[in-house]
Image (tube, rainbow, N blue to C red; front, side, top):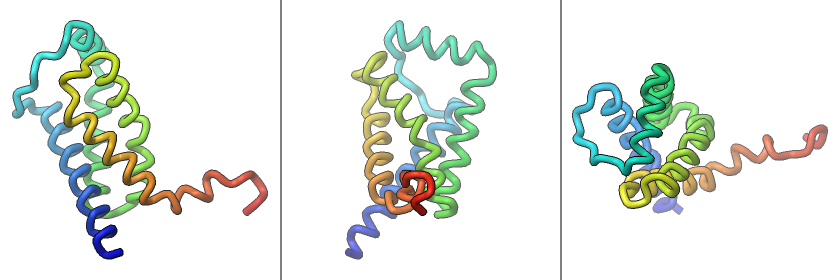
Length: 131
């Protein structure tokens, strides 16, 4: 049982680091990123031209990463990352399947953490009035 908790803690920390590093890279560009396929590049360009989408996304990811790193509001942080993880998965499956190793790993970690913290979400899934 201790190994399971240690494993989940390690995954939580790894997800926090991934979110923090890649979001900071979105703001400061310190990691060279491979050139995405043309369709993916157009999609990212459109998000960038909107002016607010990518900065908001990076900011939310940093906040989630800090919560995960500090082990504060962890179930909420994991749940809040779910729609972002889904979009990461769809982006890589549909637009950049070859360049998605970190993205696929991130989504896998998210799914494992959702399962590990499922007991926290059970009240949300109960029928109204059955509590």
